[in-house]
Length: 249
Ligand code: AMP
Image (cartoon, rainbow, N blue to C red; front, side, top):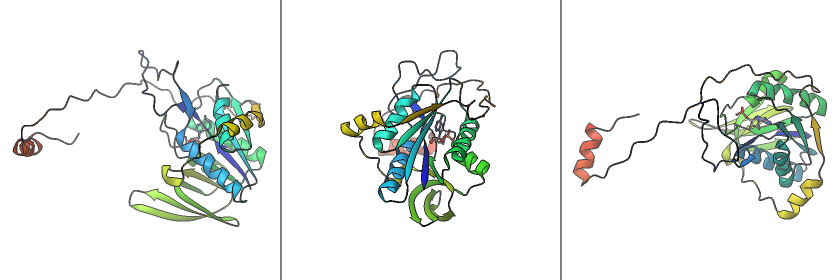
C-alpha cells in the first residue's frame, strides 16, 4: 500500500505572528517556518505503518514555494521515502491543494492519504474533506487511533462527546489529531540520509490543475488586546465581582 502524506510549510507554532500593517495578511518575512505540527504526526503514523509492514512506500508532498523543500526534507528525516514538491508562488487555497492531491493520487496509484486535520496558519480544516469528496473515497477525520486489517481500517476519532469508532474500506483519506502519536525526534544521521532521498519537482500546470484562488481575503486583523487583570482583597470581594461584574465574553 502506497501512502501519500501532504505536508504544509507554516509559521512555526512558537512564533508570535504579526499582521501586516496594511491588514492584507500575516507578515512572514524573517519568521521561522516549520512543518505543520499535525502533518508531522501524519508522517510519523505513515512511517510506523511502513515499519509494521502495512505500507510499502511513504511519499510526502508539499505545495508552495521552493522553500517547501525544507519541509519535505523534514518529512524524509522522520522516515518518508521520497518527496514531491508542487512548486508555485501562487497562494494555494484548500480547494486548490485538494485538486493537486487528487491529481497526484491518480498519478502515483496511492491507496491511503493521511494528512493533518488542519494547517495551523489558516485553520481551514478543509483539504482532507474536499479530497475525499472529490475522490469519492471514505474518510475519517480527527483520528486518534488507526488499526489496519487487510483492506479494512478502523479509526477512532475524537468528537465532542468522546470517541467514535469507524471502519473504512481502502482506499481512504484519514486526517489526524494531536493524540494519535508523538512524532520521533529526527536524528542527525536521519537528517543527513534525508538529504539523499529523491525529491521530485513538478508544477500545478504539469498536473493540469487550475490553482487560481476562489476566495479573496478582505482584511486580516490582530485579536483585541486583553485588558489587564486586577487583584481582589479577599474571597468575599471575589465572589461579589464574579456575581455582579463577570460576564461571559
Ligand atoms: P487545511 O484544510 O488547510 O487546514 O489543511 C489540512 C491539511 O491539508 C494539512 O494538515 C496538510 O496536511 C494539507 N495541506 C494543506 N495545505 C497544503 C499544502 N500547501 N501542501 C501540502 N499539504 C497541504
